[in-house]
Length: 487
Image (cartoon, rainbow, N blue to C red; front, side, top):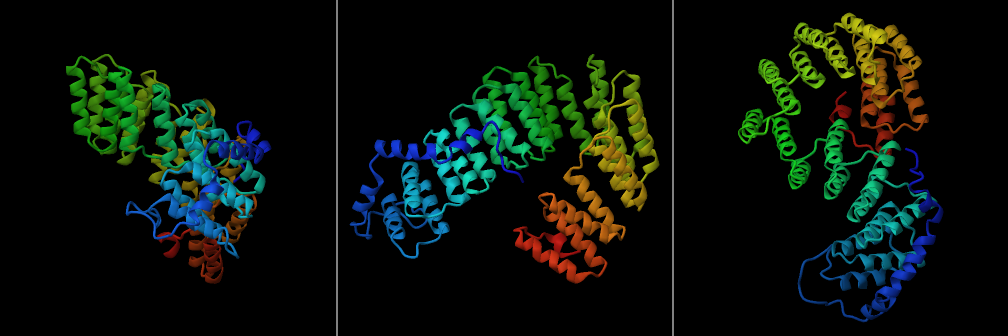
């Protein structure tokens, strides 16, 4: 994973350390000097004060500072891990200004920071409303060769959102994703909350969809945040739509239908978005006939089904392996003047591939290659996987060449399909070469890739090589899962 250096954070890289030093100076002049406090504390008895809530064994910040003062006087000095644990305890007491001073003192006595201690420092600056100095710490990390992690960027995003600098937070989020960092649910929720706080309802709804598109299922808190924002801006219909969608996603289709009935009683007519949510839920629950009834209802009310409506029906039939019915829906949408998109064709191609009807899937592929829409990476990955499953290795190889010639860029799913296909068709030497090429090109290989190769090696009775690879994944900090242990 490359370092995240862009126009957004380049200034902090250039000024790393310089701005930080100026903050330490201005900071120390606005609060009680830390050294004076520690000197006074070192004279106190550790028998201490009254009982209260404990933080890592400390009842008060004074207790923590007494220990800190002793630690920096030790020889050899304790490790950064021990200092970080102490800093974290003081952060939990919400004494952010003191943590900043502690970090400065650690630097003066020669303690080398790591990503965890610097993340704590960034968090303290953000909590103090000094996000600019948080960026300076990021610059310092880059200069020191300390690789930022997802916590680093999530903390800065949170700090920007707290100061209502939402556009900057969105830019940092986009930059982070572009450079290969995988945001966690907290980062998504923080930005979603920030968008709602400034009333960007459209962006908040789009962001909610993006979360799902990237494999994160928004929790009830995320939905409630957006629904609350919509209600506060008097967008009641949109709020009810989202509420209905949430119930559909939770498998509560009957309650979602009740919500639609409630909407109509209140004089709010459901639109195509509301009905699409219901159709999708019915199809995923295996009740495609109910989804067809929804389509009829829509048409009777003068609401034209759109590409999302037809895609939901196709997917429902494909899930039940009723591919002729799915193909009928595809033909019907074309006849009704609704142009299928690549999702429509990918759904149909995936349905054919699931039941190993590769020839029919390829017919559809050739059709869209001639007429459009343009096949995407999902199209190619689905077909290539089916070719390997049918042991048509030469076809898969030729298809890969066509894919690259079309300008498609391999993603991690493509690489895993290739690796798995080579292993399962007995081409271990080629699989090992591919694995090495991916590693040499700096791809961040996760446990899935190691498990595929270890499984292939074990089945080919290359146990010693499999053991070496298993030891390597442990050295790389990857945790084996059940598939790794049971090839």
